[in-house]
Image (cartoon, rainbow, N blue to C red; front, side):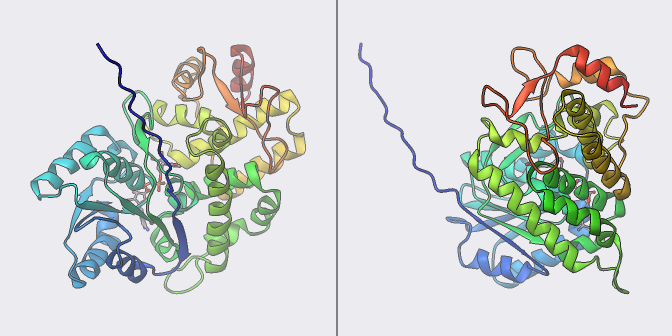
Length: 378
Ligand SMILES: NC(=O)c1ccc[n+]([C@@H]2O[C@H](COP(=O)([O-])OP(=O)(O)OC[C@H]3O[C@@H](n4cnc5c(N)ncnc54)[C@H](O)[C@@H]3O)[C@@H](O)[C@H]2O)c1
């Protein structure tokens, strides 16, 4: 008998750039040609069918025009297709098209695409590189940055996945022009979340400018570029600051979960009739209601957050069809649950987060506390 010790200590540099601007396809093409996706000779452009029609074919043409070997792999849009089945279908198609370990992924789309394509890239050939080219405000605000990738199951969202950092993130605010209003609202929900958790001045900016971003400024239906660029930059800064401190979500990164404990439960319970941003808006108000009862936020803070979310056109109450007992049951599948206790992260006023005596950014919430706050949230 013998025991061998296998020394495997890694030093990893997963740093990457986030480029914010307008019409960034030429820059992406230049980066790919310059080798931003190391070791790759074949590129899988993964996107959904809405984005394929709007932008995917154009990008495919531009990449091919440079002599790159690229194929587009498209799937049906929406959260309900962010599944293991979709991932397996795409993988099978890539294998059939002779994609191997010398491939890379270009994820073009919103958060559903970046989550699914990033996860696929993390497991295909035991891990191939990828870049995120985000096409929604929500993905720009949140999903495309941070390296968390995942798919949903019927029981829980984002439970099956891995950490896989992109080689670069492109935030092209000109692509937001074609977003339906509801998708802009979704992105603004995560934007308000960021301001609530990390930057009071940004919150004040949003209070002054929130309607401006939704104003179409010219005959091209363009969104306000100045406000879009500012929002994109502030969102990135807040998110990457937190992620850089705690990539694997051992503690500090939990603050990005603000509003998500209830929000994540609401999405499947309404069969995704309310979307991610709407669910987060309701969840943000809910954690503030709990926080108000515990003295973490003032009544004025509470009313400012509710009012800002309402001005965006986001819901702030739980839909009547969802039952309290189902919400509690669903929240038990939240990733922060420890020893069967449902945990929440909380705002400390506006622009900061509570940190508790044990050093954790989350604390358990008793069933009584939950039931009382839930009753007041319809
Ligand atoms: N990984 C993370 O850290 C993280 C963080 C936040 C959210 N997310 C995930 O992000 C997802 C939500 O992201 P999303 O709202 O971008 O969803 P999405 O990718 O489904 O996009 C929303 C809709 O907009 C369409 N679309 C995309 N770009 C468009 C454009 N430029 N013009 C017109 N239509 C466009 C899409 O086809 C889709 O129908 C959720 O699955 C959520 O779990 C992940």
